[in-house]
Length: 104
Length: 276
Image (cartoon, rainbow over all chains, first blue to last red; front, side):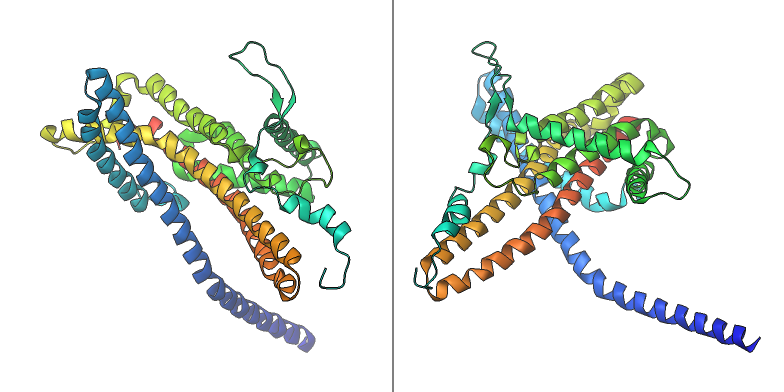
């Protein structure tokens, strides 16, 4: 009986120690993972923004050259691409991929 | 050599390959030519070979993983199950139960991209001909762009198939006043068109940059080692750098495949529900 109790207290003690160790481990890990993820997010957003501007410019230039004036097309396409880039960045920051579309 | 060692055999074996330019590893080498007409070159290249190896590996792995299903899974089976669960959860979290039908597509995409990235990190067999050197198909933008176009094309096809003209609501978000629509619609269209491009560029740039960094560091090791004296000893530093970057690349290989798959899920969600 006393054996059983000793074992049980031993076990609960083990549980406590395990929880404590886990907590310490988590605390150690979390900041590193976050800064890494933030850098990844930053790069992702930067690529999205640049690509949006370039696609806007390219589209404007192409449509413009079909209509006779590539320069005017470029001038219209660039701000649209810029706005689209900002919109993409805003949207992907409001909805980080790691969490999926849950906050929609 | 100033270290008093005869480094020549070592040089021939290891330093010579290090002297290759950082971009040489991305060269497409035909293995056997299939040049039908002047315009169409369908040669079987090292890129084709490594894509085949990727598909073969995936096939072999999942054949083994599902061959003898046990209640208590073995190591291979549980790896397969973890992969399945991981992608299944990703699909369920982003698209809900409606998205179930897209699971095979997303799963195939994820496994293909991940294995392309991953197998490309394996070292080449020393002394093997250039055509069978380790090659990362995803470090070529045409490969990633094809995959991206495939995903976005599926979004368009499925969206039009399911909603007809209603799919165009994607370009006119709800809650926008009518007078703003002429301004918002072009922005939304450009934003939509930039999706496949950014999807492709992100994966390609990550793979390319990682492999170039590895090669440049390897070049440092070679240069320092042949410089002699104290500088030879310093070559340990870039070597440690290579180890660090190499380990990081494994993380990047997984992370980029994950990002590719989850962004595909998010875009497919648009096909399911075009009005935001």
